Image (cartoon, rainbow, N blue to C red; front, side, top):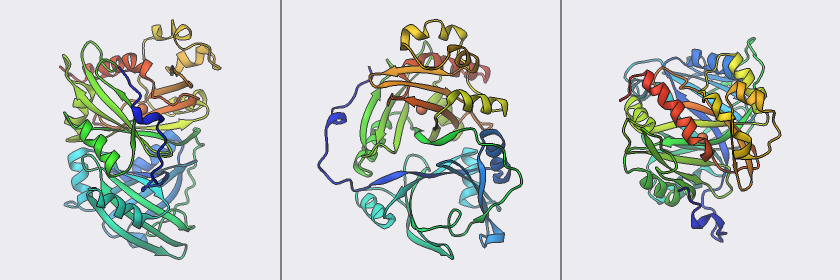
Amino acid sequence: MSTLTASENKTTSQKDFLPLQGTDYVEFYVGNAKQAAHFYKAAFGFQSLAYAGPETGVKNKVSYAVRQDKLTFVFTTSLRTGSPIADHVYLHGDGVKMLALSVEDAVSAWHETTNRGGRSFMEPVRLKDEFGEIVLSGIYTYGETVHLFIERKNYNGAFMPGYREWKSVFCPPPTGLKYVDHCVGNVGWNQMDHWVRFYEEVMGFRNILSFDDNDISTEYSALMSKVMSNGNGYVKFPINEPAEGKKKSQVEEYLEFYNGEGVQHVALATDDIIGSVTQLQDRGVEFLKVPSTYYDDLVSRVGKIDEDLEPLKELGILVDRDEEGYLLQIFTKPVEDRPTLFFEIIQRKGAKSFGKGNFKALFEAIEREQAARGNF
Ligand code: FE2
C-alpha cells in the first residue's frame, strides 16, 4: 500500500543545510544538439535562449539553451569522439545528464553535500563575463546523472558565461508549460533504499510517499517507488526500482536500453492541461493512450471536476484525486529512439500526490508499447 511516512507531518527544527530554490535547468547529452533544440522549440514551444560552442570560445562541444516560462532545457553534443560527452551518448543514447538546482551559495552546497558523502562531480568554480558571475559546483547522483548547484544571484546575462544570447527568427508559440514539477529516476534492483538514504543523508531530503508492488503492478510487471522531497517542497525526486513480474517491467527495460540508472521522466507543470496537450499533440508530440473505458467510471472515482469530460477523453488526459484535491496528467511516449526518457504533463488542482489511481491503466498502456517492441 502507499504510505505517508512518519516524517511527513513532523516539523523539523533543524536548519536546512541545502536550501534549494528550485530546478535551474535540465541538461541533456544528445547526438545532435542543434536538431534536439529545434524539436523542443517546434513540438514543445520552447524559445531560443543561448548558445555555446567554438564561436563563443568553447572548443569541443556545442550547447543550445531553450526556455519556456521557468523551464530551461540545455542540449549538449560533443564535437569530437572520445570525450566524456560522446561516450555518454554512445552508452546511454540521448538522456538527462544534469539536474541543475538553484542555490543561494554553491560553495556551501558542495561542502555540505560532499562532507556528507556525496561524490564530487565538480568543485566550486566561478565563471565570469561582462554580465556578472555565476558559481557552480556539482555532485553525482544515481548512474552517471549529476546534480549541479547553480548560484546566479550576481548574474544578469542571457544564461551563463560561455554562452551568448541566441536570437532566432523561428519562434513557435509556447504551449503553456511552466516549471519542473518532479523528476523521476530509475535505479537498479535493490537500489531504491540506497538512493533514498543518499537523498536523506547527503541532500537533507525527506521520503514523503512510498509505493510498493501492490500499488504499482499489473498482471505482467511491477515496480516500487519512493518520493523524495527537499525541505520547502520545490524539488521532488521519485525513485523507482523494478519488482518481480511475469514479464520485464518498464524499469528493467529502461535500465537495459539506457545501460544503467538514469532519469526516467520529467514532469512539466501547466495551468491549462487541455490547452497545452491540444497544442503538443497538434505539433506531433506522441502520448500514451488508455482505453476509452477509463472514462466510463471517472466521475464516480474522482468526484466532480471543473473540466468537461469530452476533451479529456479525446486527448487521453488522466485524472486522480487525493485528500487535498485532484490532478490531471498525461505521459508522452519516449522522446528518443531508445525506450528511455519520456515526459509527463501535469496540472495540479490542490492534489500533492502523483496519480496513484492511474498507475494500473497507465502501466497497461506502457506494456502494450513494450509488447510492440517484443518484450517477454
Ligand atoms: Fe510523474
